[in-house]
Image (cartoon, rainbow, N blue to C red; front, side, top):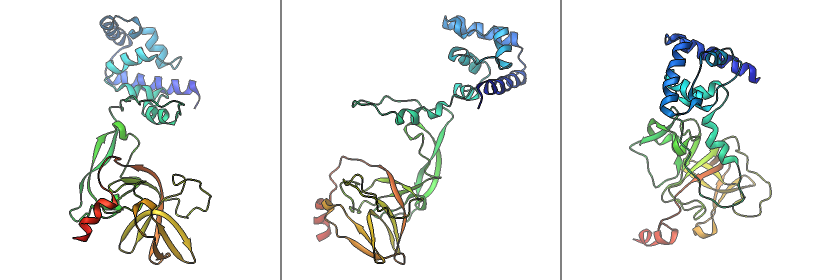
Length: 272
């Protein structure tokens, strides 16, 4: 959108808000003078002319004057910034898209105070943590939670799977108890070449009696779910698509990498 048009729309919106609050441009000037004096910084000050120019769309306020507008109009800073085309909610995503050459710590980026994401807070009573399943079918209650580190995670709208605590199919690449993100638009098994196990496509499959997550191949009407070599599990074969269907391709994984759970550690308990 054209910058001048954005400024004009933002100005009209701010003017309407000011008038709803019963404030004159002189009132805003006096109130911003107090803020500037307290902050000991004249950049917080909005003169009568500045207010009228902003409302007329002649220019956009800088970050300090935007702060004063937010304080006086009782708005969140992120909301005022969005009027002028600055979407602070995109900060974490844009930061993550920047690839830096050196290994580094990631500083915390505060989430916008008005943003929230739906997260599961209660699972259905019959949910079995030992088995792999689709997360949406296991959740009984959702609640809005401030975004924080989960800013772009919306479990209610997206498709996610839970790797059962007894499912070692792709261990140690994907550990039991992990959450996986599934792209349901990629249901056709890719035949593209891959060089390493990290490049090999992983799929989430629905079976007659549950779900599986693993490397998949289709050969003569048979779906083969292939485990990781270190999992000590066998290849499982199903009639396709009567006994198994592809839910989608796994595109992300959230898991704990520290723990003593391993296929070997589980063997003694299986023998009892």
